[in-house]
Length: 212
Image (cartoon, rainbow, N blue to C red):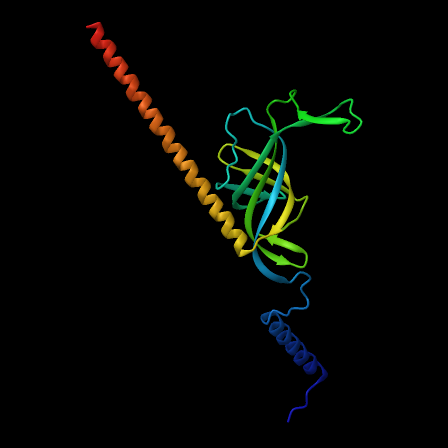
């Protein structure tokens, strides 16, 4: 029988080590990973966008619609908007009141400036280091850009929350009800417009008869 040389033992040990590492990875017990995935969950995160200039009468962000996301200058994907909160830019004015020496009012020097908080929903891998979506760590302070049909504006992530199945159900139900209400309102407006056109047409016809 051929006697093994020291180099042969090194090769055998290396092969055994590779096999052992492969087994650990397959079993989900890889000790060499610094951020092992603990679970995959739905998350909601808020984006604070300050000083958005809007002269249109309609707000471009709408709950239930999708917006394309860019994180740290890297294009990611479209995500659903689940909530939109906004207000005109505010300023603090001092007042002669010892109990409350200031008041917060709209900044009339910037009438078309708005601050937004946009809430988005995504599926993320939950690790010991936080939520990771599309290879991006979703953390407070992360720069992010939202882009839609008629807007492209950037802000920072201001809040991150994991969602339960119940949370997701409630959110989807609220969005469904919102969509149904908007559809009902649209139909009512279209009906009113049709009635107005019909009444105007009847008036024009009567005027023509009187003129004759």
